[in-house]
Length: 302
Length: 158
Image 1 (cartoon, rainbow over the protein chains, first blue to last red):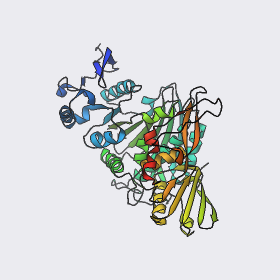
Image 2: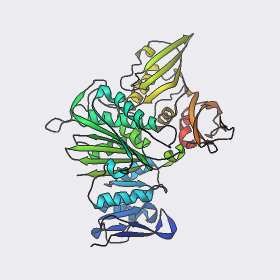
Image 3: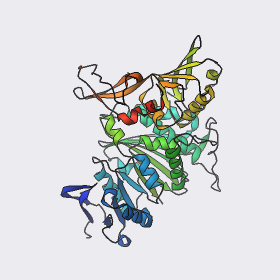
Image 4: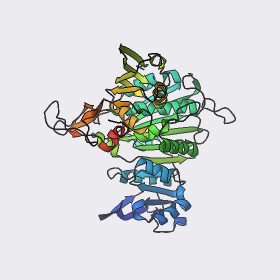
């Protein structure tokens, strides 16, 4: 029987810890801590930006970006413009102390097992799941309202439904108008005026999962045409310009609103089959805790 | 139920008071506002239920069409709208002001959040005013990040 891999970290987020933090993995991942090890031999490199010099960070992100889990305490705009859009990294974890350890564990496990991240990986099986199917743009808001009004949110800050509603609206509209392609891979409705109603022959699956830790919203299309480049270009433009984009189709602000209102944005692409985007809101009674949370970004592609 | 946007207008002299209800989105049509031809517009957002990305675009285009010198006032803005006004440029032009808006406060004694209607004139140096709980009378804590939430104030000339 193979011994389970362990990552021992004697300091974290720039602070020396009294006891070693030990991440016990469910699988046999070979995880390197920052630049202490041989990156060529490591399956994953867990990088705390506060534990490295700027040059060391630049070097490791440039050479080994796709294998890095970057933990950053910077704000969303800084993280996006300086790390996610600049380097080929797929995982940035917001250094929020109450959630970071669990998020690192979950993602090391998912990456090392080469599994994408689905809503079932996030929400405990004992949690509650609420589902809807949408394929008609004229029914987006009715379907989302019905779904959101049916859920039992429990102890939370006062208005998570308002955020779920905007997240759901943007994700489903993106999936309806942005994902559909013809047989040659050309977008069908991406440049169509969003006032024009459409009905797809494939369904958009919407699922809300709730457990004692999170509220998760998943929107999954059956096309799998979103790419990291399209996503990051759209977000980088929005963060830089902070206004709508003058182009046919959507306003170019959807992912910006999604990233800004979610605590974690997880994108799971099975190329030409499906794209699942999951937004996570941590369970918080205090609205300020929700807003203080640095947004994490996780991108999984097969 | 999906709530399509509706507009209710009151014209008094050269001022239009416009009460907006429902979702501001890709289907929102503001052409009747353009036809009013007044100098001052007071938009009441109290019954706005959602403002999505296409709605933001439609709104900013409306504000652009009303012109740089249009006297624009926003009243009763919901919390999520204030957040989006702080995130995206174009809501507040030279002669525009947000007069009143909702903000979250938390009462530790009641373990409860309350949405409180604040007047922009009461915000000094981006600090939230003191508010007491409606139930127990104890002082509540402002439950947002002040610098972020009041960032729209920087774009307003007083």
